[in-house]
Length: 221
Image 1: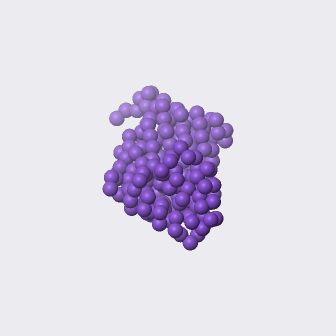
Image 2: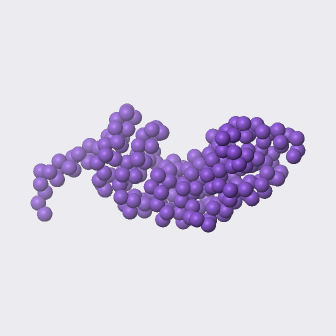
Image 3: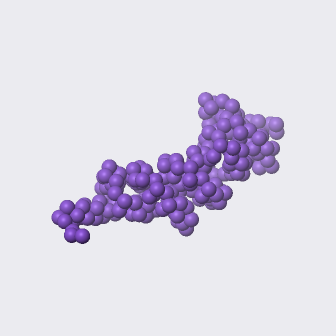
């Protein structure tokens, strides 16, 4: 097959776009990701996923995820699932985040307990969000039981993320939260009580729910 001038121009355009994803200036990388998503091309997918694993700027990573969602899911899904086993935490967390945006139920079996309990907070938080989006009907109680093992973990943002995931699962989380509210660790009890309050009253606010839970735990009830 003869190579036309248009083919050559397309190749140069693709090469320029991919090079721009590596520029030192984050605004250039952001614009490049936007351009790649605006004009999807299968040739971009591998490089977008590779870049997700190393991109330091949050806003650029978010645009990379958007660009991936603009490509056919049958093309991106196998590559994203492959990233879930990466040794690099950012590769795992960004793959999980992108899977939550694509929402394809075929990804569910790849979200394992290891991801939900990942020692890296960003990976675990992404796994919680993604699992809540993808969990099949009937498997919510089992997911809630695993998520409840992470109560009391990390700082304020991590605990808020876990509470939101449990609240989003709905009333099926009540048994797991009630069991965790009797845990020996006061941090676990506090987090469980606060999350249960939010489950019953989503408008209560996380900070208010935590303060109320702390008072309950301090009183030994």
